[in-house]
Amino acid sequence: MKYVLRVLYGGGLLFAGIGHFRNEKGFVKIMPAFIPFKRFFVQLTGVIEVLYGLMLLSGRGVDIVRKTLPGFLYAVLPANINMAVNPKPINGKILPAWGLWGRLPLQWVLIALAKRLK
Image (cartoon, rainbow, N blue to C red; front, side, top):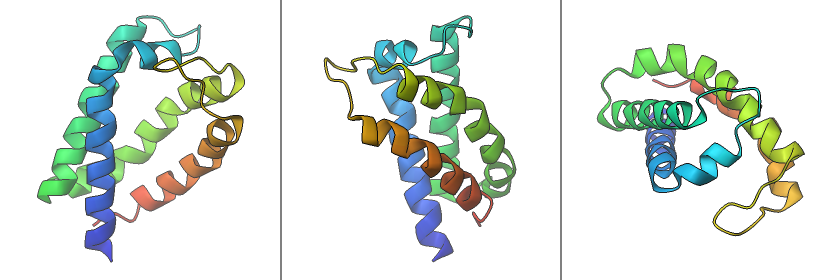
């Protein structure tokens, strides 16, 4: 079960990280206004997600990911909140409100699961 969680998490993070570069403008749009250097932070979080994903998929550095991923997920929470409060079109579409608001409690589940990675 722990292997499955690690592979699912790794694949999800790798996919999300690549998305930061494939749709950089969309990720910049969801950043709260108070955050400076939005493009830099989108790229930085994309690199971190790709690295986390590769580490989990390869099984190397899982302890580092387990210890640091919860903090990373807390750090990106303001963008998820901003996206729910101020929905913006991404690729020409505004995501449904239930999905945007549903992401927020899911973030806490992801944080709890990150602490169980092995």
